[in-house]
Length: 434
Image (cartoon, rainbow, N blue to C red; front, top):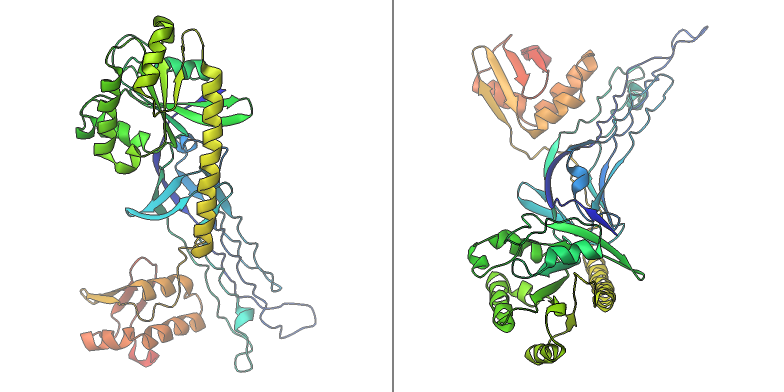
């Protein structure tokens, strides 16, 4: 049994690997006067995957590390050598993790070993040997590898724990957790000793599950009194509610019903979640009083326990383990059915290079023009203008897309400088280039 720290939401940044550059090169061997092009292609950048694992129960691993980057592809070499592909990066997260980008949920990771490709690495640039043809036997054409940007995303843990402890302050929830696990929650004789959730991992009689001790709930919690909605949000992330009542209180049924009302006000789903009742501190009452309690809650599953004297815990922990296993099995069956209907296990946010239909903008300055848009920015990065052939290839792409026509229509003049946003491309406009 052990304790683990609590983190249920983190913001991180990821970056797939950039593609390696293709190169322009020609064979140079003794006694061969006219060697052909032998520039190799660049390797692909590494992809980024998320993998759900039952080995994790919290996002604590992301507390110190927030930046994740896959390996870049290597540049191509001479003798038609293709650069090595960058290594993929697999990021492990707990079961029940949501991936959110720009406030939009991308996916849920539900079951053990589920894999989700979140970002695809950049393609390697082509070397000049790729461009060889019957019409151009000595091309100097080559490409840079695709670049990838940093992507900001949020990981949100939907399933906090298997069992959530519900009850008024000071009913013994923290003591219960400290007894059944190695968790060390703060324990004292005043309300709200628990300010943040504590997680305890239970490994008992062949059953393994996670129990969370949450701040004590009070009337009006659904209106955000006390720990309020934050508490209810955490509780809704558990599979089973263990409602702990103090055996020494006279108004047990009333207190029970009051908290049940708060659950219903907050969420019907939370209200209908499976619930087990544990009557704590039974060492303070007589045996006949137990019979009265059973009558009060005759339609509920009840366990009598004493966390102080460690009585009644064996049957409760085994029962919880059995229920958790059953719920997990049912959930996994539903998930597998859904995966068969919607094949979203592997989805990529990869960048495409066919932006012909994307809009572009041209802004006029003093003897200078700036072009912006996905199409021109992408190709200005992909085609380095370090050879005349590459420069002409880039201009032909701009011409085909209507960029040159719009420049002329807007009044571009000879020797005006033309730049492309987010790139190092800059050239002087010459009418005889077309």
